[in-house]
Amino acid sequence: MHRTSDDVELEAALDPLVVALDVGSTATRGGVHDAAGRPVRGLQHKVPHAFTVAPDGTSVIDPDQVVDEIARVLDAVTADRSLGGTRVAGVALDTFAASLVAVDASGRALTPCLTYADSRCADAVVALRGELDEAAVQQRTGTRVHTSYHAPRLRWLAEAEPRVVAATAGWWSLGEYALHRLVGVALAGTSTVAWTGLLDRRTGALDAELLAAADVDPGHFSPPRDMTEPLPAVAPARWPALAHAVWFPVITDGYASNVGAGATDPTVAAASTATSGALRVLLDGPADPLPFGLWNYRVAAGRTLLGGAINDVGRAVSWAQATLRLGDDLDAVLTAPPTDATPLVLPYLTGERAPGWVGDARAVLTGVTAATDADALFRGVVEGVAVTYARVADELAPAAPQVVEVAASGRVTNDRPAWLQVLADVLARPVTHVTRKRATQRGTALLALDVLAPDVPRAPRATGATYEPRAAHADHYAERRARFAEAYDTLLRG
Image (cartoon, rainbow, N blue to C red; front, top):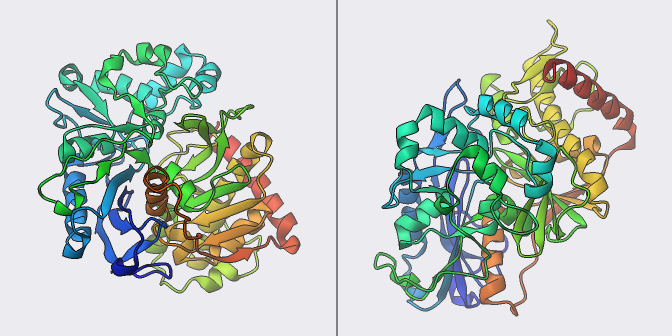
């Protein structure tokens, strides 16, 4: 099992312990953490998975498969008999955001889990944008009308699967479904409900206009609960170590990722770099002004998360590496000086979210010549990904002017830290590498520990180098960003 520098032996771990579970785009992970937020050595486990995708925009995963994965993770991380039955005080779960599962009256799935990347409701997005005042919707809910959110998805499902919709008794997230299968209760954290696009960011109530537009019953949604409202211990027989553990409402990975990266106040923006990515800032209260290109989710009473999501980060990098048949040693490509010969790449493999919200966007390559080789194409993809972060950062600046640090975490950053120099150059600001793996899982554990052990000092986040932007490359990347914007407006905006 993986060992990190801040792992702690079980014998030295501070009670109470928590089990943190993280269902991401590529795997279900979990592990035991002590009261200081440190992972317990040897009590970590991972089960890989993948979304099922298709050219029509399908992006789904079997929810029962994920429930089985979570159960297998719990089997692995609670098997040590020295845990006993009292040391673990809580179980907390995060999942990828904006998931949707239709369930019947018994809580069984009627549909696969639609992921954030499923874009089959693109026509419904167009229709709803014609019927609603999208700017007003965004001011209430903090979200645009987009394929990632529930209103257009539910409109599309009513047309595509009317019998399923007629039989539906609940519209749950993947995490709610998993908790119901594991402990008999679907608990939706405030952030999970917010990522449906239906929650008022100020009042915490479901938005009546969007519910009417989607023609759905508000009673089919779980009420939002903050982390301060866990389910009392239920003592599932399969896991004796959890006999006295409370179960927390499921939260979104974006919220957890910020906390795990140490971006817990308005001075630090978190850049997550997993299969998908985001740039986010935690605020006290709603963002005002709220830029039209961003979202602002209510994540807890009095707290919101401002930022923008990027569908294709690790997905774009992995696609380029596999398609171009490149090896693993790409540092020379990433550390080379920028050049005008690098193709300009708009890396939208599965559509765009922030800041333009073109759900059916697809990748664009320009400036490719007979002299362009695989390394140059790869560099173009990486630079294109960095520019997508910069476009979000530009929107973020007026509403979050206190940001002085970008904390970058996630698989892409840990696998290829050299790319952070490209990101710093494109953003024109310092980027700190958060080296701790499983930062999202850590954030989920910390949020639970804020309830279970508020007075125990937490171990500091693990960080590596801080990459300073290089002034010599500022003009080059400013020109490249301008060309990116021009190509975007011409080819994607029409």
